[in-house]
Amino acid sequence: MSTIDLSQFVEENETAETRAYKHALDIGYQIVKEMERQGLNQKMLAGKMGISPARLSTMLNTQPNMTLKSIAQFELALGICFEFTSCEQSTDNQTIEGVLSHPTAMGNPYHNCLE
Image (tube, rainbow, N blue to C red; front, side, top):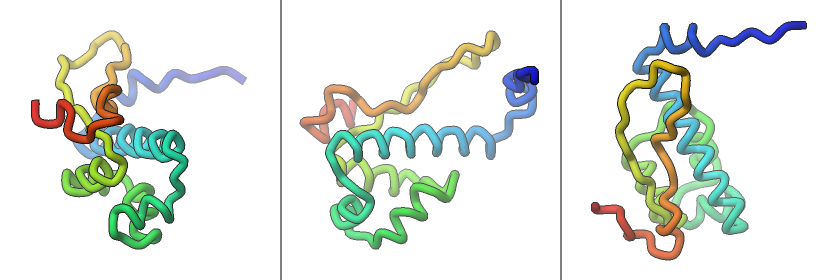
């Protein structure tokens, strides 16, 4: 069985919806990694956020239902800061990560958040 590269098709047919979905997946991945790093399960994180575990599950699994407010809730509960950057569109299929947890923000939730 041969492998099919769909990256060009996806790139040519990208919409705001597909891009929002990708961003939400990137953010969700970062949240799950940080939960693992801190030894938190969904019930514990939901408690820190003041929401039910069912609501947290919906926030993490209903893509792209991430709002700026929900991202801020995750930042405050996890003591992290998401950093948003912009870049020019890539035309050579290289991957550019745009949403990353700031590596020095782990100990200080406000470090570089307002820069």
